[in-house]
Length: 169
Image (cartoon, rainbow, N blue to C red):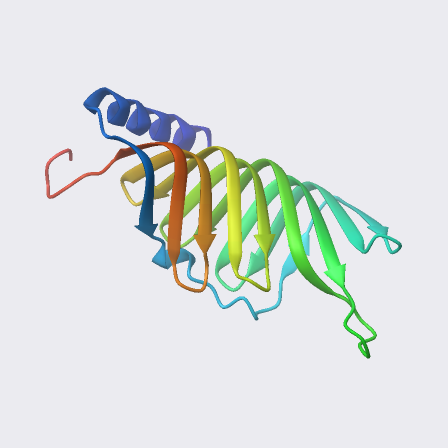
């Protein structure tokens, strides 16, 4: 993980030096296209349930899985709803903080915080966002991922480095 961050930082620094800068951009995010109806599995070191507020707090080495997608963080607050006539609740929104990493296939994104609205299939990552797709890397202040369409919108000061052809091996 430290090596990956170091390599990503070098890629971003290269992008800054080459002047590849933009205010916002949209990228294909096919590796994180996700069936949002799949079950969500969560593991953590600790769990705290607040039924009055409809929340569950997971802390310590939190790992969330849904299909092939994985999200890890230090802390995750999950909101759940209990539809009328249903005896069990279901998670509707997840708030992750503390070294958030979202991965699927060859794509990975890191940020300080993330909010996953499960019903909408939208993940919003904020705070020093870094997206890697193979050898390519992008950085931004905010990234909105539409998991159903496999599209990510990066906003704020977007910095990128993109390898083309065989140059840069």
